Amino acid sequence: MLYIGANNLVNEKMKRLFPFFAFLTFGYSSASAQLLWKISGEGIESPSYLLGTHHFCTGEFCDSIPGFYEAFSQVEQVCTEVDINSFNKVNSPEFQRKLRGYMSLPEGVTLSSFYSKEEFDEIAKYLSPYFGNNPEVYRGLKPITLIINIQNIIMIELMPEFESSSGIDQYVQELAAEEGKKSIGLESVEFQMELLYNTPLEDQALQLLELCRNGGIKEEAMELTDAYKAKNLKKLDKLTRKGCDKEEYETMVKGRNVAWTETIVDNISTTPTLFAVGAGHLPGKYGLIEKKRKKGYQVEAILQ
Image 1 (cartoon, helix red, strand yellow):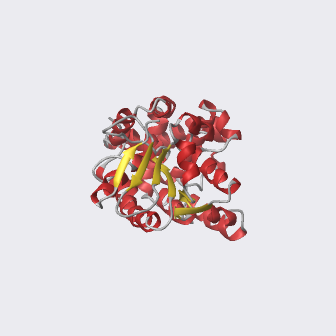
Image 2 (cartoon, helix red, strand yellow):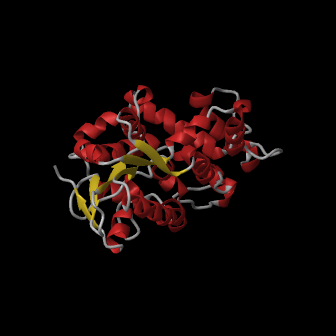
Image 3 (cartoon, one colour):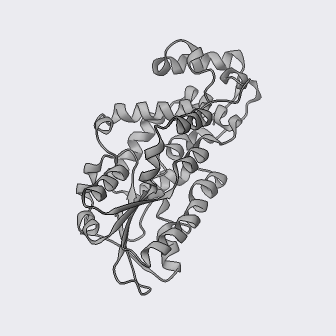
């Protein structure tokens, strides 16, 4: 139970904070604990594959996923959530201006605008180990910008190897480049920035205050990461579903899965493809696995 100021406003957002913004990457298999799925049938000549990823696991984890390298050798292209080609413009002055716009509060609004003096003092104290003792450093940043930075810092503390290694998504793209396979994406960088940073500012402010009061990111991160590495997908699904409300699920999972399904179907009909996406997009009634089955495809877990 979370409270804001004197209003005793109960807020469940903090329970959703970590798994939703940093780890929309989990799910479960009703058949087995597996991350790699084969898509066949409906007249396609060669199978395609779905790989559930964890955005903070390094590429070396693919060594422990049964059938990964064999599946990779069979496809002609890879598809991740973000088109690797869109990263070519990330360092351009134009994109950097856009990024600052996404991360920053509107002109005339400061971080302290959302809080009482006592609440902002709490926040400043919590943020000091991450951003220093001068609130001017972050006064113009959106709360979600601070939250994401804290999450990244904590994840690198928990998994130092991630700082110098590629995540699974990037690793798959790098393998494709090495072998001359095409890389495509389901979304643009701009779309994901919009999705992450343009949530209601009032909600972001509540999330940041509850993070400062209750913490929990490190413990929840460990639980989620351990479950993923153990391929305990039922537990991951339980943790993730507990961590998001109906509106968030509609936006971040269900809606994107609808759009992705069309792209996936278009590609597998002509080109064997390995789709590497956050594993939370795979399971359930509205998951990518079930959506392919409803369209007549066979979707089977790769066990070895």
